[in-house]
Length: 268
Ligand SMILES: [Zn+2]
Image (cartoon, rainbow, N blue to C red; front, side, top):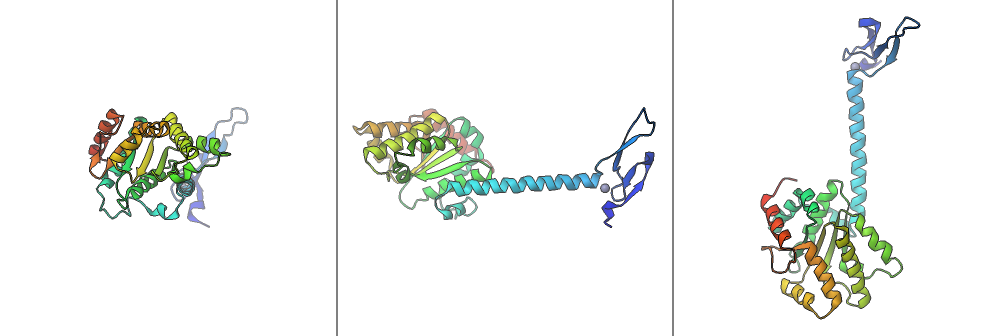
């Protein structure tokens, strides 16, 4: 017999645990029959074991949820490994990305997103994925898609697909500029970006385009481009390795706010 199953009769004729010496029974007075009712209760060691099991079960459920959300988030499985922990420390933008995550509740409230821009190989997509992984670890829902993919949505499922994107706490759209340029494709991109704008939830965009190129596209005599870029610049603060650029953003107050978040930093 296990020690914790051993009992003895103690005060008030109640059963006590031989291990922790706290009662396993509780007496309820019985005015009709005279003798007390005795009901079973957990002793201290049974209760702590029960609570530990509950905590373990909750943790297992949470980890299953996180793993499920991570599978949905990334179209490439290697991106699951693109984390702050696995970063080589060469990109100074990483600290700003960490500050973005550390101040997530506030960032979300301010509806402030980022445009991560820089040349090919500058690590923008890695940084975006690291932000995604850190937020996924907190149990949040994140989706990372690329512009080429969203511009190719079939006309038959575009409405439902676009609607479903509002469910995510953070949407990351990779590689602005790589989308197809047909009217249909641009309409799809606008639908997704506009839906995000309406949802009031943060968006992160990555792009190889320079600030000048983005500015030129926004100034093009093409209403589709203007509408897409206006929405993106209203939601997102441009961020290069050199820091926030205020030249392009329509949201000056968000630029200043984001600077204060980067300065504040924080632990994950
Ligand atoms: Zn006990």
